[in-house]
Image (cartoon, rainbow, N blue to C red):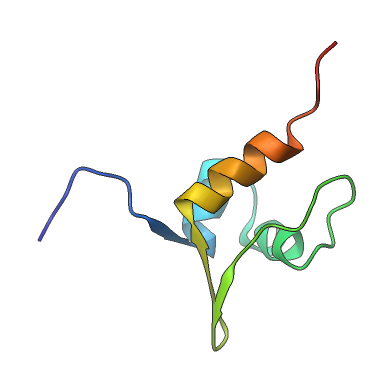
Length: 68
């Protein structure tokens, strides 16, 4: 079953492509090791990390610098 919609759950690699950063940086964001941003919510399945698209979009909005 193929769909043109964006997947509801993303891998670390897919999040890295969207954020234009490395997979290691995404993992650091998940683990709360990136200064100045809140930890990126992720689902852990063994060693695999999955990020819900809705959580990623909310995290981006939450961490966007306020413009005054």
